Image (cartoon, rainbow, N blue to C red):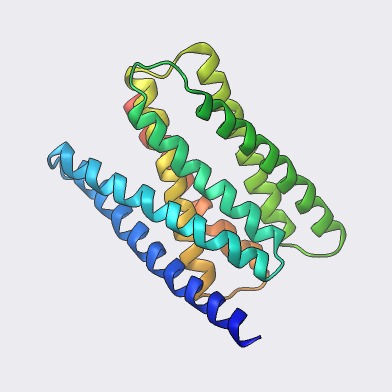
Length: 215
């Protein structure tokens, strides 16, 4: 229907704008650290990136429902969790763990379980993009589980907190780059394009985390 098309296209335009804003903010947040610019600029860029990711999430949910894609729905949850968790590590310096932290990690565990299950079903049906969900679902289980372990152990101050903040926000950056990549390029099989940013950037995240932790 014409009305549905108009709503979808409007959401798509807003979604793309949020995506570009998030990518630019991510570049700003990274470069301000590399160039040792005032930390306040890094904070501003980080906040803009977070809200850009929230905008991507809010617009992607109704679009995924409109096109009937559980795949995209679950990917959206995974992506926004990375940004949410990264933001919480930035803000939660010494305070007690909030209920919303536990709920968000629990929700991510449920969504990641769904990602793994759907990925397996897709592969059994001959859809190789199920590999994408298996990888991202596995990462979701690992990261949400790690967050819950951090909450239990209390290792969320000092270098640990900064390293966790860095890891999650860079993970969210991978999600933003992936969204840009799969929107603007095509490749067969599709899972290669979906996973390429993760393969390229993930080793850098481990390297930067190791540096922050003094390893």
